[in-house]
Length: 199
Image 1 (tube, rainbow, N blue to C red):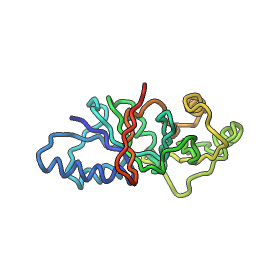
Image 2: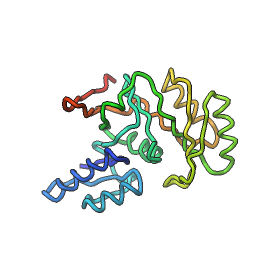
Image 3: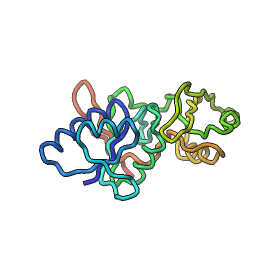
Image 4: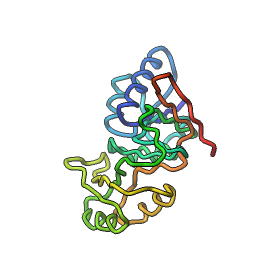
């Protein structure tokens, strides 16, 4: 089995648990979505393979926010490009969050990964679309790019917004994950809640 390994605090616990299962004889290989995850997987004893060599059976990841349609905002940890690439190659995407991440409408600043060259011109275009972008100071993605964290009034159509953002020259990827989550596992005070996609 090939498992995509997401990035972030929630995924860290999943990686540790998978590592324990590997030590007990589970035969899996992982695909890391960041250098941070690669380090954690190596420490946990999970063998890793490159994305381009294998189909992915399932990916386990977290999210900054999840809306009622199971669209996501991701990228708070800065790994949105690789996370989206791995998610798009996965037969099943499982998102693990706590109940505070489930929202009726998005409010978390939307991360937009941009190339370093002329990033200010990209920020200007984002402002023209109604965003208030702020450069994530002192942060470079694993791909050598910048991240602009963008505040907004509302996101009415996540699919349309995702496509619009990625049409801006200089934008590498954005943190809207539309129609990629198959299952959302929500940790609540009363236990675990499972939400499945209707798509």
